Image (cartoon, rainbow, N blue to C red; front, side, top):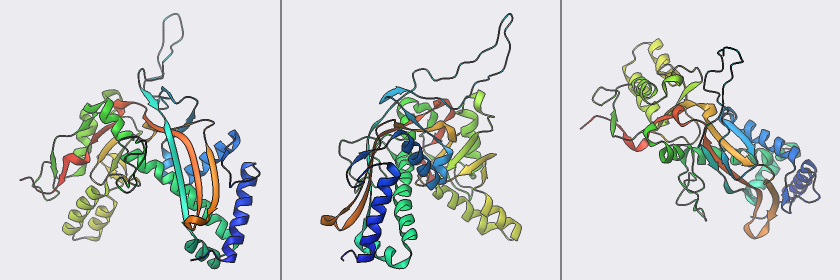
Length: 335
């Protein structure tokens, strides 16, 4: 399908708007994102996906360095005879490493023509902007929850969740603090024939055995729970419920589990459980490395929005991360 004239005209205006926003002459040529626009780009990414705005995302100067601990987990109040009480904040030996990260949001000519014919120029511009920004933001979470390596050449067909794009949070804990992750096989069966019958029991055990004692009652602790586990628990409760109030309770059970606020983030593995603070999950981008390019590629019959940078993941405090690995959980009765 050819690009219709309306879409072609809208794209030209979109390119002009991109160039004006970033202060460059031509957005179809790769350009560096200046410091003020780095801040605006980061803000757009955070706004496009709600969960991304809840975790720690920041810019750093070096490719490798010490983790920027934003949690402030230790006590900051006390006294000292003859002087002033002070406290330290930081994680000795906890480091990060960034790697080249290249994103490309492609929209086919066919879809561009539909967008152009179904709305105004302003609506078209918003669709273009939101499509690229949201896809980039979602990929940051996709890799963060599923990444296990940083391949020289990534393979999206073999690794659709970005497993080979970078090491995500769970992999970092697996490599550097394996005792924080339960890997022994367990059976979750709400009907009562497994090791655990409720998610509350699993979460409570994680919190009380793997989270450091000084952090167990921290109000910032939350639980991240996979959709497969939530579905299994809710289905069982709904099947047993014979009153409207019980059905409502079943529908709301994923809001709080084990006394902690519960979330099921985008692309979170279906059978994984994590107890941590959201601020404990870090994404770093190296300052001054952001590059953008926005062009119509006729050979591929699509428009491509491109975003290059050095980026990586880190954990603020390993002792504030406790998990059951998805490979360890079986949903169903214990043999």
